[in-house]
Image: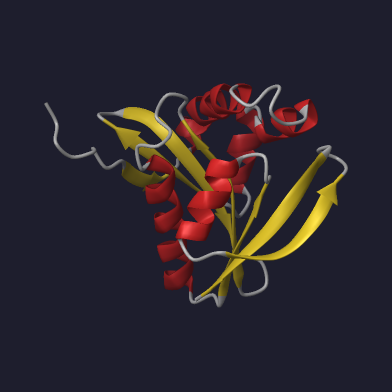
Length: 161
């Protein structure tokens, strides 16, 4: 019996990880069908070719593994002296076990190492757990928009560093 949660091992993704990452996104976002607009689910569940393009094209994608199994993923980019953290997903059934928090904390630490002044995230208010997580990490709402391409409202959140 484990008394403590196993912390995920977080590493920079490699090209070979793209199919597993795409599969994780598909499983994680399928859980939200019926909760959020189907256009958002389709957009947030990229194919392996798109994930591979991220890895070659200026994004940093971090994976979280537990006992060798992929359990989470997050993407970072660094436009104009800031860090955008997006595309976080956690293996269905593993939510609430600290995986998303560990990934988000890792992304924030990466942003600090890069010397940026702010970290940005965007979250769909219907995904209350994600919004709660970002608030608990110190993010504050800075704007709202209607993402017509997703059919959903989005809250923009920032964390000054």
